[in-house]
Each structure stands twice: as C-alpha cells, then as structure tokens.
Length: 182
Image (tube, rainbow, N blue to C red; front, side, top):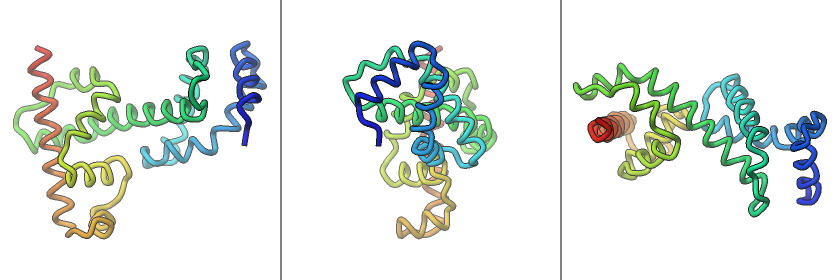
C-alpha cells in the first residue's frame, strides 16, 4: 500500500516528466486496474490495450488531479470510463446488424459516436431493473445466458428475451436522441 505523501511525491515527479516515476506509478496501479478493465472488456488482450490507453489519459491529465479525493479512485474512474467507451464503440459496431433486426428504424452511426460514456451509462441505467441486469451481465460482464439464468434464478429463455427487449429499448432511446439532434 502506498501512502498519500509518497503518491503526492510520485505525481509531482511524473508531472516533471520523470519516466522512472511514471513507470513506478504504472507498476503500482496496473495490477489493480487490469482487474477493473477485465470486468468490462472480455478479452485479456483488449483489456490490456484499454488499460494502456487509460494510463496515457492519466499521464496526459495528471495535472488536473486536484488531490481532494483518492488518487486510486480517480485512476479507477478513468479506467472505467475508458473501458465503457471501448465496449460501446466495439459493441455498437458489432451489434449494429442485430439492433437493426430488432427495430426496422436504423440508428445513424454518427449519433453513437457523439454519445459519451455518461450518456451511454444513463441510457443503460434507464432500463427496467431486470433488463438492465441482464444487459449488464451479458454485454458488459460477459456472462452467458446460462450463467445469468443461474445467478438470477430465471430461465435461459427469459434472459435472452430480456436482452432483446433491453436492446430494443436502448435502440428506441438512441433513435429518439437522433431525432432530437436533427
């Protein structure tokens, strides 16, 4: 465990572009943060890429850390936001065909790229509980319908149905955002 005064000193060294300090900061936080990234990104290699991208953001924005809260909490938030942005881009690219099959009205790709992590999380949070739980577990956490059914005490078919309905609701909300943006 690193105490707050040594974190402060390490951050100051990083701000002075001390590469050794940057490496130390990375080595201190990377083991915990890869776990955070893996919660959101299924493949280990992709999670590592996301973590690397997040650390680049951390070092670029280190001067904006105001020392009011936990540095680890600040780092974790950047990791989560970077992970969510990654999965939203990847998921919406991979699922565009499936979403189009759910609703005949299609989502313009431009609107998806205009959504930030907070917008996407707000859309997901607006889902009814059951749909939101299945959506998060399947899409974000990477569980299978069989695992979801076991954990939530529902049938696999219910898990599948709730995922389809969650996607439909999200697509409708995105289409509404698209109409508002026009």
